[in-house]
Image (cartoon, rainbow, N blue to C red; front, top):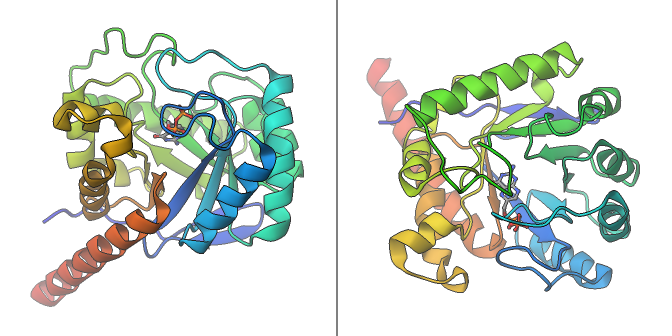
Length: 293
Ligand code: HH2
């Protein structure tokens, strides 16, 4: 049995977000070039409609991004990122009650997104890319996702190397939690993420999902984002449009290993997968408690 314990809440701008069941984070990419849905929600009204649809389908959090981080993606200017994101975040913040996360590594973009109604910052650079980011998060009281990445999106898939990928990811995240703490971000605002597909080979991604419970020892909620990624394509020989069943398997196992937040494109489908996997896991821990009583 996997013993990774789920962590029960985090704080985002004064709001306590409970994760006593695993939460579904629905992805809204306001981009022309994301690896799966690039171009589909590029127009603000389309992105807003998609966000509303994901909430109706059961999203507990919306993660809104305007810069693709796929391998080799071109960086987006601050002006373009703001122009894409802010109208969408402002409109969704009026129309939904679920927390809104902004997927960005730029402090100025995060600040404007928080002013427009977001309450979480999903920074795939874990506060390393922009030195002003930690202060923006600390001063706003936003929650922050610290994600592991080896290299940068431009270089990360060229030759990823680890001696023990899980150990290295855990110690990186531990160091980033300490850096956040030193910048005034308290631990109950932090979520950690192994960064599936960010500077990892197939075997690294599989091992990280299998040993995800090791990350729960950091005592922060664990977020994981395997949705439709290349490692599923490698295993199945399927293009990105046909990776939902493979995603479901990865999601179910991540829930079993203690994931608190699952970042997915296909909210309706994965909400069902998560519910069943979480129910099985909950029944196992009940049996375990009875056994040890
Ligand atoms: N994956 C992607 C983007 N942001 N953030 C976190 N915390 N964890 C992830 O695994 C993660 C992430 C890549 O997925 P997507 O947003 O669909 O693609 P793109 O970066 O091409 O827009």
